[in-house]
Image 1 (cartoon, rainbow, N blue to C red):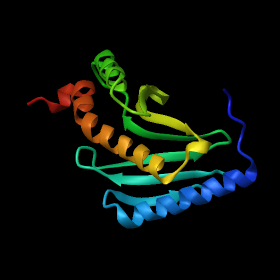
Image 2: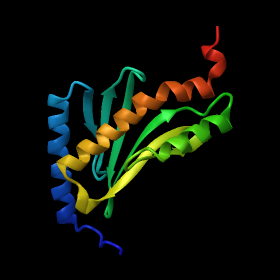
Image 3: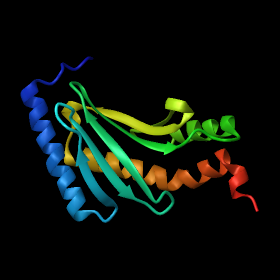
Image 4: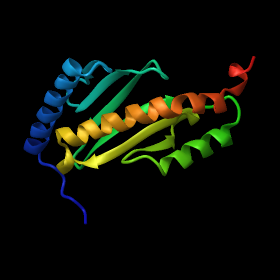
Length: 154
């Protein structure tokens, strides 16, 4: 069943909800280094995270009429073993909840997903941020060792 697009008033309310959630994340979560907003009319947030395996990365949230899209740049296009790296990421997709690895611009790997605008709530935003953080921390080093193997030798 297709959901109807959110009205401008509903989008304004959801935008306020995301703003409040993001501000709380920046104030309370040690892993959240900063939160920035795109200039209107874009409804886009950049949440910068500090990790251990991947020292810094951003999760981009984009509010659209029907969905909230999220993504992070995971690793650049592999220098070697590209099919092994892409296979590794595809196999990890089976274990992820609500997110997936994808090949994007210039063959880089992204972690992305989306939820319906009706589902935007603090708990779901927490789950998204946690999923992206955990997947990046768990899979960044193995992915780099596959796609950039010669840099890790010796």
